[in-house]
Length: 76
Image (tube, rainbow, N blue to C red; front, top):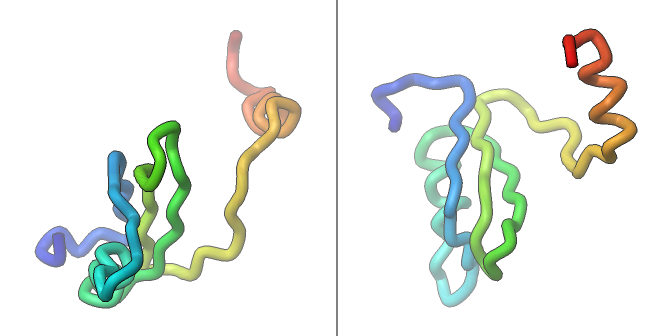
């Protein structure tokens, strides 16, 4: 992944268990010089993650109302 020199990486179906000295996301982020955010999916302890060279200033879920405003310029 380092060879790609990407500004942003998105990974899915990630196991984010950070216990017993196993810190896969933290270790990957450090190795790549990136920050990360993780969001759980329907399966416990699994989800998606975004790694970024740039600071991640805000995270969270968008409501349907927010999504509608964000996409209001798109054709239906």
